[in-house]
Image 1 (tube, rainbow, N blue to C red):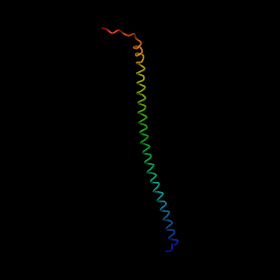
Image 2: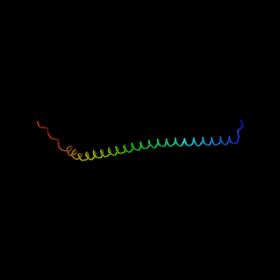
Image 3: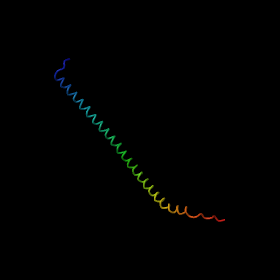
Image 4: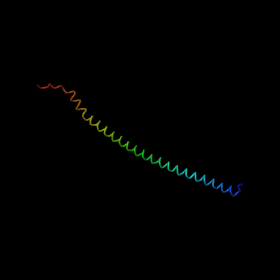
Length: 89
C-alpha cells in the first residue's frame, strides 16, 4: 500500500498529538511530585519549629537552674567556712 500525502499529513498530526499528550502528562507528574515535596517540606518545617521551641524551653530551664545555684552558692560557702561544731553528748 502506497502512502499518499493525506496519509502522511494524518500520521504527522497523530505524531504531534502523541508528543503533546506525553508532554502534558509529564507536567501533571511533575505537579504531583512538587506537591509531594512541598508537603514534606511543610512537615519538616513544622518539626523544626517544634524542636526550636523545645530547645528554647530547655535553655530557659537551664538558666533558671543556674540562677538558683548562684543564689545558694553564697550560703554553701558560708556553711563550709564556718567553724566545726562539737557534737553533744
